[in-house]
Length: 216
Image (cartoon, rainbow, N blue to C red; front, side):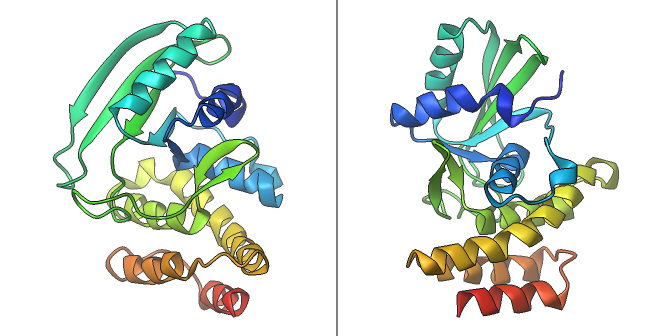
C-alpha cells in the first residue's frame, strides 16, 4: 500500500461535496486540511497517510467509487467490515483504488467514530466546508485522536502524536474564528473535556487555558 496526501484526493473530495454526497473527511488528511487552513506545522506538511478516511454510510462509499472510476482510477475491490470493537460503531466500507502516483490504497468509510459518536446514534461534531471539502471540525478530530492515542500500539501511534501536536495549535485558532463568525462550538469543547477523562491526551494546562480564553 502506498502513502497518500490530501492532494491525491482533493479534486474528488470537492466533486463529491458539490454533488451533495453526505461525507465528512476525518483522520490524518482532515488534520492536513485544517493545518493548511491555519498555516500550522509547515515543517510537517504535506502530511502523509496510509489511506483516505471518511465518515458516512454505504452510499458514500458507492458514490466515491463511481467518482474515482470516472476519473480513470481502477477499483480493485469494495468490501464491508462489521465492526465489533468498540461495539455500536456500525460498519466500515473499504474501497481499494489504484492511484497514478501512490499505487494501491484504501478509501475507508466509517459509519461512526469511536469516542466521538454515540453507539447506534447520530453522528456528532460539526461538518464544515473548507476549500470546497467537507471536513469534521478540529475539536472533534482531537476527540478521535484521543481514542486512537489510547488504543493503538505505541509503534502505530507516531502519526497520532504529530496530529495531536498540530491540533493543539489549530483548535484555539479555530475557536477564535468560530467566535468571530458567531458559531457555537461549546458542545464540541464540552465533548472534548468529557472525552479526555476516559482517554487522556498529552495536553498541557496551557492548551486548556488557550481554548478557554478563545471561547470567551
